[in-house]
Length: 450
Image 1 (cartoon, rainbow, N blue to C red):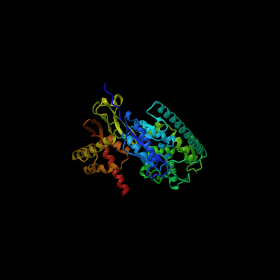
Image 2: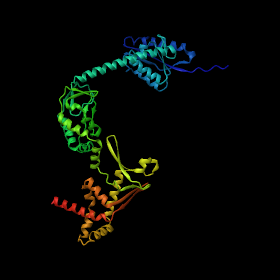
Image 3: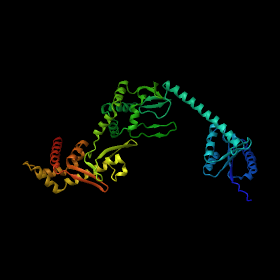
């Protein structure tokens, strides 16, 4: 009968000594630990145990921390799959902290590495060794939970006293000696945000205004000296700011408010006014926002595959809003049913406006529009029609979005989105009204600049 080959187990010996005393001796404590471990590995040679050539010796390092160079190197080799078993003289050579010991065992388990203490009959390759390990881990878990409860109780008691318990300082305050002190410049910005929200009533529009004016979140320095730069204010930050009772002078813990040790930045009346706006119907507030940000191709753009209406939609990612036109049938029946599906709103609108600008510059359209304008006996010179259409580029950028949308509806009949591009059909009769409006805008501009 052939004997089944023994699986090789690569063993790493770890040694440690807390003090540096005696390390300069020819045969020191680390050597003694290693010699005993080598003898044990030799005794297990028939089980396939082999000692790796690297030494993992930490001389002059405490067992109360994991910040040890040889231990870190040991963990790196375990994660690289170079070690199957860790051998120590005693358990406390590896760690004197139950919590740290638990962390190390978790690393061992994750990489299927066993652990042996040769003087304490502690061997996780045996059932008794695993039982002992589970008991130790149970006590370690109990220790962690007790420590966690103490920390939570202390934190709650401190918050009830109104104390600042750390974290990112709120905009409007600086932290000094673990207390919140008002930063006058930032406090003025906080008051401005609260007051502007009561005037505008829309977080979307307020964020756009704050970004336009160059306002940013707080720039602060951590306890370790790292600088956290401020960034543009987005809706997420704005909502947190408008709901943060710290600005009323309160300290909050798990939804409960307690009088804080710091001064308030806003008064109760302004807070109540802001939150009465939040209490309004969310749909109604969203409609106000959508009205302020019109989708100019709404009602004009259709799916070129199924001739279905394409409805406006939007999504938000990382505080930024993205607008789309979606095929209505595709949104109801699934996107796989329609090869067109959707298009980015900005892309479609830019294509339509670009075609409009090119169209009004064509001589044929100028002549046709001039004849149409004068068909009922009016005497509009061809030059005025040509100049009004020719300066559409300049006038267009000065118009409000709602005015741009109305002009597009006057000049465009339909926009059909196909897999290979847009098919735009213009209104010939709508150009008469556009000419009159462009001439009126141009004359108002000339009057204001005169």
